Length: 308
Image (cartoon, rainbow, N blue to C red; front, side):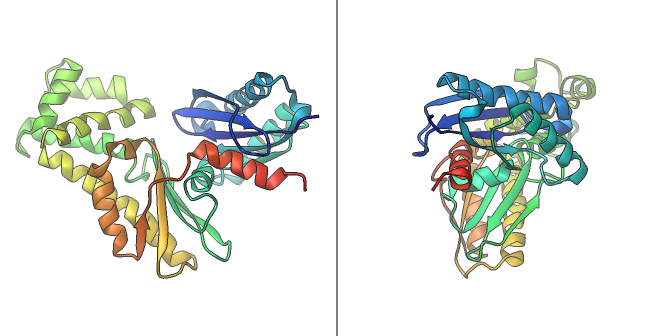
């Protein structure tokens, strides 16, 4: 019987999965919506994850009996022991007899980006979090405190801050820049107090839409809006603080590699430039990710369950 390995990279807005043999080369990949149990509830999140695992196995004509191991990178894992236990029990019931390794999604990001080597990994997608593993195999995470009072430096945080910045440009607390014009054009509504209703009804209830609002700031920054450019500098500072905390918590050498993943990094040098500069002061070098979080999920699945 062939031994199949499945890796899942879950997040707030998307869930990706892949299947491979022991060589770790994906033979099939697929994608669904986000799988946060904080958003969907335990049953719905577990069902979504189980369905995407089964889809991977079906793509190669295999059943759960043929799964040698499955690593599930899931958002929110590690934040609520009782909820974690319910999620784990539900998933194990839905995916039995497949062996499961359940971790926070930041860990699969680290595994892919740094190829499971010592270092620190930053995720800045809808939310923000960092994970580190030192040369002694000690691990820790930092950030990920939820968008309501944390997740600084994330796409959600930038989107929310961009809304605040826009209101200041609208009523004269700051000079009007490209952000004002970009949002006016994209939303097709006057930027006055009616913007309150637009945000309240069309953005605030949806994490992904608030996170997507950061794209207006990105467009404005590319057009030279200094306030928007500064917003990405502030995001870089918040992400650098995550790294500094992990550098101080764990036992890293003087020089430490740092990598990254998540949609906010698609803004390129706007974020990477100031982040690299701040990290150098902590003895850290920012490196492009060697692989994806989905690669990392497969790596961890094979590492944990490979038959020797």
